[in-house]
Length: 202
Image 1 (cartoon, rainbow, N blue to C red):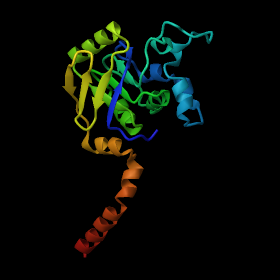
Image 2: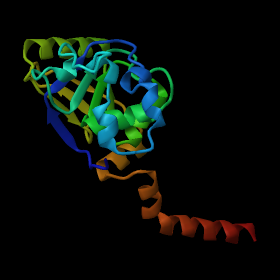
Image 3: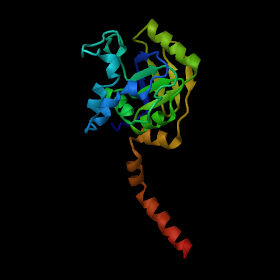
């Protein structure tokens, strides 16, 4: 979903599991779907963890625990490893997460999240550990993610870190633009460049 991104303050959903791969995020059988509806993929986010083989709800999994909620997912190190399926990012966005925090992201998955208006925020191991501790102590604690300033703040402790993001992707997120939207906005500049190139070639 295209949404402008500025400052988000939210409670968090903790997933203190390392090496969460894209098949765990959205199982391979859902890649055969003929829909791009975000709600379909969101409903099946972490499907095999949310539900038992017989289809019953796994109450022990965090997404089924009413104690936790919010649009920020805090995950363990090496999030999004495995295959490059964009469906994993569709599922995260479709569920309603707008930010994923981890100490390390698989590169392709990180780009897929950005392309689907989900902000991956990479933090230090120490900051991530503190976040998990703060959430465990108070599930209602909130985190502030400031994209313009590129900072993330644990409002329970006041701890803050700066995170990196590609300048182009930052511009797109802040203005609610995908790659096509950006190109359309700059059609005049593209045409002008083409005309200059033709003149220079003569």
